[in-house]
Length: 237
Length: 369
Image 1 (cartoon, rainbow over the protein chains, first blue to last red):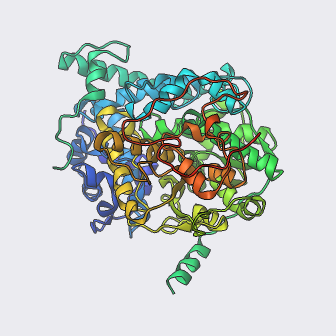
Image 2 (image 1 turned 180 degrees about the horizontal axis):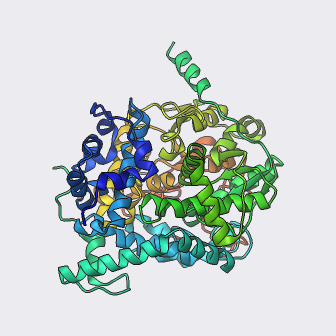
Image 3 (image 1 turned 120 degrees about the vertical axis):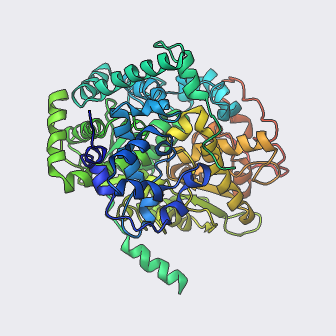
């Protein structure tokens, strides 16, 4: 199957809106936080997709580079031609996931973590983040205050006049089951549920290829590797 | 001339902000990390300023973090947002008050997308109908919670017993304002003051008597970067961005940082703790950090709310040095107590970063009741 990756990208409104003609001035690269930290250059992203060369775009979709951006969109503000490399990145990443090419790179493979954490938390809890799923061991940056808070969640929320996981409006209320059911149906009809299954399937194939244990849990060898591994090739000296 | 130029530029970036009858949608990050902040926003609006704010407990995440982690497709996110709009419409409201900057940026992006591509709006309506049977109107007024506090800043200042002034020296407090990237970097005309000179927090700080610090990395991202924080292997990106900002603001000796984004106060608070643990380095006075506030926490503080009602005990960087400086009465002993005075222990102390009243020589004014 010979896919025209440029044509596929052009179907994404974020791609067509994000590229209005790059003049390679490099302003985006100067302002980009990711370019300072990673071996990353948003100007080259714009330059590459602008060539319309399907093979070069396929290389981007299979590599680490497109996963370095933090989507802060600082590039959008400063571009003198109103391009948005950050939007191009979003379209490239969506296509990389949709075509399964995300499993070809160390950073791309991390998409399984996104699916198994916030992707599933959205449907289970109705929140993108859920504090009970975030351990201090995994998030030592939370500091001693987090440990104290987590040991006393009911009392702490009560201190602020709300019920933790209560039914009334308030922070971290228990989202009603009917609302979660609606979210699930939205994910089903808009293709997110199928995409989640596809991410699992492609990741499972990659795990087999890499000889790593793969199961539905968060602590299998494959997930541990993609979550923790930094091969050291991504950042500047 | 320079100031006049800025003021002229700001005038080009004004927007209409509703002043009453809001439908409120919450932030995932704020609810998890700073659960008191949204409650204070509501108390200030409802109790102090007499505004009407409606909430439906069945509203959910907008999926924004999942969208920007590139795992939730745009069609899905648009339909979840359309459901929030439907709940607003069903409540008879037209003014959406958004607690989160990621959500605010996303709602703006979606409404703009629908404006330019009506067929995408129609498709989203079909998805929502099919999944939930709901219909919706687009909000007549879309405002971030910090926009609303900005709009009402003079009313807040008029009722506030405290000012952003150092009571000991009589000088204005030096304030770093940090604007969440998605507030206006994508759509500068949707933010007060645009993206280069956003005025939304500066206006509040000026109304409360403080002085803004202009430092080189003022517009740099806090470093959330979505997947760059969520995945452990990438987390150095996030820390490095915040550290770059701390190092850049340090020579200007700020008394406090104010932010309008859910993630930024979290990162600017917690990464100060991490830098202290990693390098023994602290950025505030006497071994403390620079306290980090949201707009409503700061508004609550000057309005005379009990600081422990504001949730300042959930910050890793302590606010005590600032409160002492401002002459705000508070009882340090009540910081970690429950609503009815019950004791449920206290957090352990970091290795380097000083917290609570440690290292502060001046006694606070103690609240007696």
